[in-house]
Image (tube, rainbow, N blue to C red; front, side, top):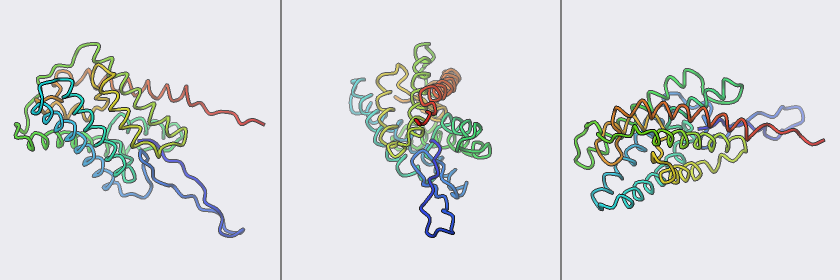
Length: 259
């Protein structure tokens, strides 16, 4: 999700220069991992994430008619599932599972930092979208729902779109803020916790992810979103990503060393 930083190792002998070692962290794109493996990790990780979101939503509606309990079950499953997926797949692909995060990493690399290349963006984003659709179909299959049924859950209201800007901006601020402050080891817990909280404090229940948004249009269940609402949600998520990067630049300005 965010760029890893290289740290020099100690010299083994005075005449031998110390090699640089890059330690993969959750949210980082590790070196020397084959691109096909990274693409597979992004596809499978996004598929499992959407299966968790959609599947837990279906399960919740079957167990209770209380909408508050349904949302609690849905958000709790998402928190645990997302944290595990970041922990497992972060060392492989960086565990983006989100085109906004991938694009933010590309922008970071373009500005001279570590991140992903245009070629990696061209591989990651389609893998995430295909994974999201696959995850929605898989969840429907597990619960005996139609494999593909367009959602009728309209989410086009203005206050919901504002919620997506807030949710996505906060996510980008968190991920890249952790990178800037050298605390990426907390990414699995921090990112999952933020998404769980944003389920409740944002009006949109925090999709914050264009790929997941597209996948959720393929299921007419609790977690679905009508195809007509996709453009608005994705547009606001991209705006939220820009806002998040601006906040990172503002809050985590490079400091001057005291002399």
